[in-house]
Each structure stands twice: as C-alpha cells, then as structure tokens.
Length: 112
Picture (cartoon, rainbow, N blue to C red):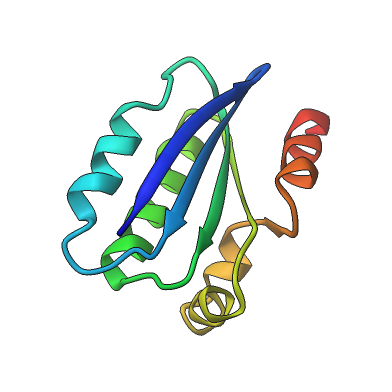
C-alpha cells in the first residue's frame, strides 16, 4: 500500500512516498500532488518505494514539467535498485536529477 507525507524545509517541498506504487494508486499520487504548496518552486521526491507502475512514471514526468514551466526544480532521492532500473530503462535518469539521500537533494536545490 502506498503512503505519503509532505514536509517543508525553507523553500523546498519534500514529498515522501513509502511502500509500493501499484496499479490503482494513481488517485493517491494525484491527491499528494494536490497537497503540494504552490509557492515553493523546488521539490524533492523521496521515492523510497519498492515498485513503480507506468502510471507513476507518468506522474513523475507531469511533476517535472509542471515545476520546470514555472522555473522550478525537481530532484529524486532514496531510489531503490529496482526503481532505479525502471528509471534507467525509461531514460528518466537523464531527465530528472537523482541523488542518494534526502539531505543531498535539499542541499542541491538550496545551492541552485
């Protein structure tokens, strides 16, 4: 089951996912996206999940585009090996910056 939480660190929003993103979780992902503050232009997605669907990949692309259109930035962190493999196959690892830890992601966004 997919769980999420949203935290703020200054002008950086942190969206944390737990569990696995399966078929039918699109509504939960959309709910979490709707809860993101509109004023922050920097987003960390802590993707500590064991599985992602193509729907979840589509949501990542949507988020990336939404933030980029407003001059914002998105960084992924805490990627499991199986999810990293999906990101590599879809070449999203070339589009979205990926770092190991949430702290690294916040630091990266704070510097840029």
